[in-house]
Length: 331
Image (cartoon, rainbow, N blue to C red; front, side, top):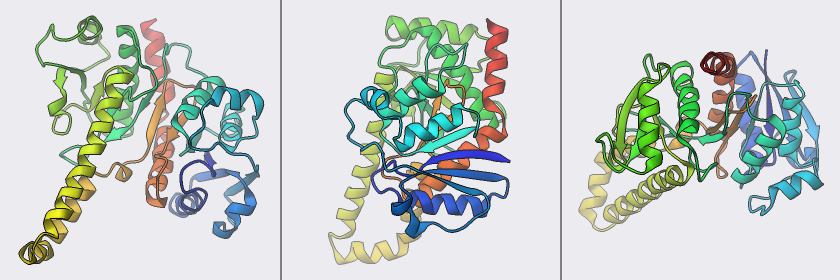
């Protein structure tokens, strides 16, 4: 049985979409047991009795705008996210899914779940939309503003295994985001990382990748520091939103456009779906001793269900054990 802890109170619209996603996951996956952490009185309207569902009640939860998650952890470990993490750290479950504030997720992950022995950094790795609809792993997207080249190598090894085992890519490749695709481009960090990635036998290195190619590249893993990765991710999100606004404006601009929309409705729906990260799941916080999935704060029940599915896949494929074995061989 795969045991997953779910933070029922994290996110902009909690607890309704989270509880509904939890129930859907229990119906869909017969080998999953979920422990839900949160205010039982607030979750009760959406709950059902289920033999593989446990509730751990707490009235405390972290607001999305929390300023100092370290202070919150030191002064109140009863917050639903922290309790769920501790439950996993104590060996009661193998993974946690939360839509809580990103900074608190990273802080809690490192303080409670802790980094793997051979991982020198933890990173946020969302799966971003791609032209072929399969998605690409982008990391780091914000956990570390500054990273060393050797840190990028560790993260690349981990992400490549996720691409193979969870995303089912038979021979995944790793690309280094840079200002040009030629060898020798970029900052000192980028040049050093290029050489280390190219020389590592455990990494199938694609080479440098310019950001204009992010959506269409055949590479499966896109790696960079947290500052650059966060800009790439938010630029993609903003561009997708902007394209949607432009399309809506043009459709409403004339009767001819409105009629044309009726014929293009299915194609436009597929277009929107191809840019929707909720189709894939949440962001994986990699480098920790246990699986931690950070769903988007505005996740609906469908997106959160996919985040739970993602956690299930990580545990089922024993990704952390595989990474640990490879890093121990390199040491």
